[in-house]
Image (cartoon, rainbow, N blue to C red):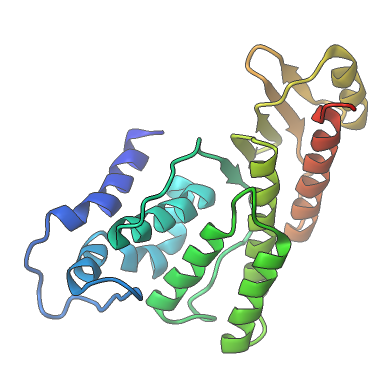
Length: 239
């Protein structure tokens, strides 16, 4: 991770240890289950900004996948919940996938929604877990906007990538980078026929695939889904 991301993480996770007095008009920021001191700490850590007007900037700076995980870790840390730290999956798609303040205007409730999604993004989770969260949101706030539906789909892609034990699924610029991938020579040749222009570096276990250009958010999600399905079939051990 970059020094900037590490510093940001530490600011989120360590501020509870260094509480100082703040003005009385400190913006309210509450998460169910936290003590008043912990509420104060998470406000000091900038979680209000994370979910408020500066949200898109923070997501752009650290990547949405890491953004979700950092929120989940921060809340667990403040609650004293022990959590494992698996190898980090980085999944980034150039699409509009977030919970807008115009849909859920409470910072606290947006944090809770993001935290639920983060907790449902593991290899053991399923689409049913995400549909339940979406149904809860729509029951409280009405029909979800497209950015929320996109977010649910992206989290499902994260589930799939975790089951495949991938570390990088990065759609940046004109190429998608997937790692780690293990191809034998025959599989590499077959895959290059399906995805012309793809490049595979066996030493780094890194696969680069040309991404569709000028694609809509829906087209980009569907393309990524099809790519992961194809990779899963190509790399799955044969009986």
